[in-house]
Image (cartoon, rainbow, N blue to C red; front, side, top):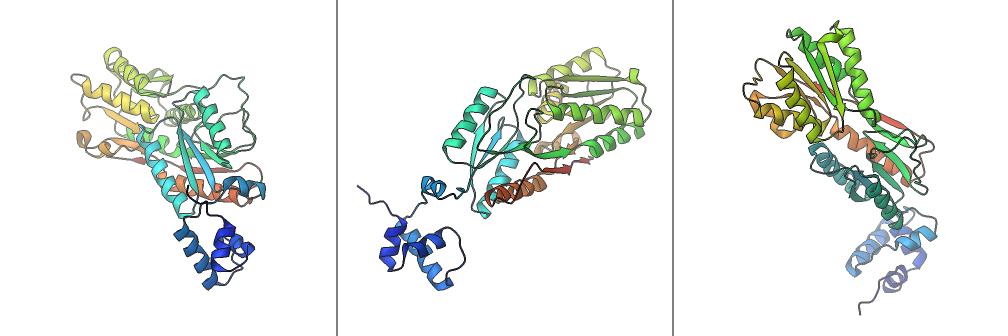
Length: 328
């Protein structure tokens, strides 16, 4: 049976006190560099692994955090998970990723597993829930990502402000001569969906577009809703010449429907997506879209996680980064 390597094992092997080894392995700097290097190298050679339970008993927070996203088929979530993983690795933070598929039961199970793993914080995309839902996230620092759940007022937020990008999109469409508009987005079950819809409506009014020239469609933020809605627009309101999407999967579904529709021309009509999928750059000569601040979001996420690790964050905080319009 393999022998478990402990702090005392390393101390005895090097002939130093176990308190000195403990300080080095805990990241304390009050040890001479030469001795610190010897201890770190020997710990690595022996295969030493930190005991999470022991850290917790000593009042230290294990460097374990969680990320909850609906899926990683969504290119934005996949890219964010990759960027966050790289950023966490640089800070020696262990990231555990769970997929919720927008199912509150799976979300709650994932949070329980993170607690069992002694995670101290989680960045999560909240699942759609009933209005009377009361979560129990005791023991975890929560960062709501992209979406917000109003029943969690004490959490931190990591959000995107799409208002300037949506306004730039409407301005461009009006200047190009479009008169009949359609918006496809998430409904009010998600605060993010409500915000984007309000941004769209405010911009439409700002640019003097008559309300009868605008159709607004909202539903579940998934591929199927985007697909069926865009198909309905093409078949039943062919006079609509400009479509703007307010969600990543909605955008993919809508675009798929338009590509399958006979006679739909991206040169004569305008489509503005949400999230910059890699194929948007070359499809149909290039698809204009609302681009999301991926790198800034990952950087802010790590700042929050590091702050929780060091007990530097007290009370809710919000990091809000602006989206931008990419014209192609």
